[in-house]
Length: 448
Image (cartoon, rainbow, N blue to C red):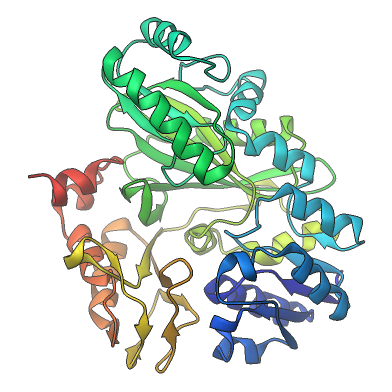
């Protein structure tokens, strides 16, 4: 087992990992930018080092600074959290070349699954359904037109190195396709340094269902059931829950088994998430693998009772999974709301600034993962999430009621947050009865 771990991240997830380390008897070394200097959670680490200026490019994305901090801190391993360098295979390789374990998959598995086009090929080889589309990357406009004719409109243009909706366009006909291909390529090049795109059949009103997996270094893979992440705005997740509402038991078992099969085929290790879209007839299709811990991992923890961060650390240290699939229950229902420092009344404009006061919700089944506190200044340089509000109850109906109550209890003064909007979504009839898809929020709250 590791003695000291450096956390190459900030905020909520850094605090989450510090807590896991403390409970495991492992010393935690934190890093921080000038913007995060003085953050209260840093005091809980055994040591903390400044790694640069406020901007991510000058601090949390600086591999040389992170490695220097790891060497000065004399750590055994680095936990990347999510975001920043969490899925950067070069950083992964650098860590290992410096004899520092990377708490995540191998660089090879990360590269294989990080390229969506290669991941689709792998899924086909593992007999996991994929959305009909191009066999490889689209080289030119004429090829795009031919593929679209074959699979039928509408089609979805996707960046092979994409994420967060960037490099993604929907084309309803040939004229739109020709324009959208160039736009998607340009956006992908700017966002990811890779202009490669491919085509998929556009699945109308899909649900976004993902499966949490754990895989050790000895060939054993288990799943921690599924999460529904369909409640999104502009491809950004707002609310996540487990289990997925209205999904049949047959489909649920098939989708979880497919995720395990794919992960085994990729020789993947550590925690990961296999993402699918599910159509109205419950046909499901693989879309990508997130080779890291997810923001929404707490809902899987709540329904299974397992600590995913601790398991990540144990697996990375070489320990085998002692769990069998039958040891992993799915009890009750859990919902998570991402509380962002954004103003819903101003088109979700970021709202950095000082939190004058904050009242944290409590009660049975309520969890709030956050580094924020009264007097904390939300910096303008990073993701706007200030916390994750999670509830767990015996039924989905009870979980919704509990979350609405908890959102009412959450009081943040000094900045605007998305909490009031989350409450509106939870109170909507379509959310209550589980008839949601990835376009639900846009139709229900933003259509004219």
